[in-house]
Length: 69
Image (spheres, helix red, strand yellow):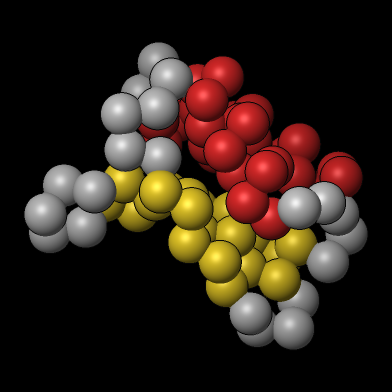
């Protein structure tokens, strides 16, 4: 499954269910092909989590670990 789809369908609802302060979760690919999940909070603070070369399972583990719910 494409990472963008996985993040929209599965990761985004999971993170928003775990933390009501999360306003958005989105996928971004940079010009140099690095891939990130951008987690934005209601306060406006955003956190970028690198997911380049991650499997879907690794994406979940890396993002949850990085935002330390």
